[in-house]
Length: 526
Image (tube, rainbow, N blue to C red; front, side):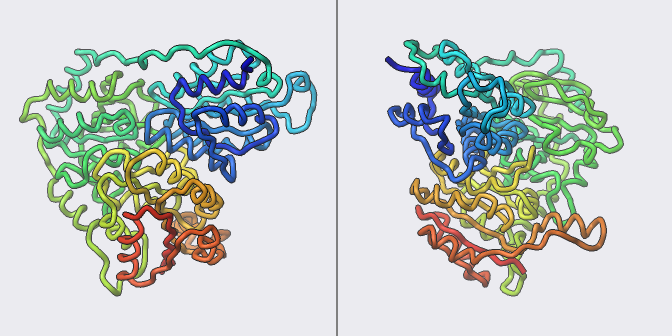
């Protein structure tokens, strides 16, 4: 007779799960063997944080919940950073952790922590599966809440004595996703009147503009009306940066030209904007801007983000409804010269004698990547350069963590991306973030993944040094020493290169990125 563990895995199969990322442990032994006998591939990772990041990026790229698992105690706590990243980046993830037998949880016990309580602040919902009979409801609820807009993480704890109990049951049938209502006519009409009365309207495209697959409707509105668009870091790709209306991101340009454009704007149409991505005090410091909020949820209460009208509905439907209400003369492309200047700056290749910097390398990286290829950015000073200076032409092709902003996401995230999309994948990381999860190179090699890791090596926690220099004119506690990254990668059986001139760097990018090989390219920075 099947047991609760078999039933849980059957429910995962019914949810369409393809991979479970995790680290094996004694208290999830039954779950592992149930996975072995299923259609789901269990991917053993080198650290639980890597597993959670893989689930995080899988969810962000596919819109379907990524699944990670770990044993009790330290295994469960090691998941927290990746699960919290999914929580603040609005990525659907279901985390499953083991637990000891229920008869020892009322007292102090080896490795036993109240993990449900620990996870409470960083998930949409979590619970212990205390009885075999509640497995189907628990799994269905975990996936429904993880994937419902706005998505996020959920967590289930699975005690080992429950896992082995016999039960004969099946999964709960999956229905169509819950749909938000259409936007209400009164709010759409008011939003349209505010936009029409503005002299310098602008769209601020946030994470939700990409996450909800609303890019097509945004592009349609922009094509017809020419209203400029500036994105948050996680909204990159909502419209193509080739389009004259694109001002790239809020901080784009060598002198923050995009920030000056939004300073000039008198009406901001915030589409899928989440204030965890970018503090609105930075672009609405004097509280004078008219704000139209378009999202699946009402706006957060915030002094610098107090919208004049809120359209709470499906994001794409709301944008289409606004488009229908606006006349062709309602808006204009009031800063075309700024787009041309930005794009020319960020796509100009370096001269032969230019220093090796992240900013100078990005035009060559962009040239080597196709429009649909996916760039995973780790967190650090290179992330800021990518956010500001890397043009993006398709939605969801530049993955930046900017809610929790977790270092160490790039390599495990690239593994998930390589499994999830039919495109070339690049993991861009600094030496600090790379070594946080570099062991996952073994996971990538074992899975026969084919992507490119670019390590920008400045032997420093560079972003922190920059901040300290701004604040104090000196820095402390940030310097690092590193292994030989080429030898390190080769020890995993991975091809590795350390180009030094711009010609060598260009050739390395052009050879590695379109290939099916797993490659590491180290760029020592000047």
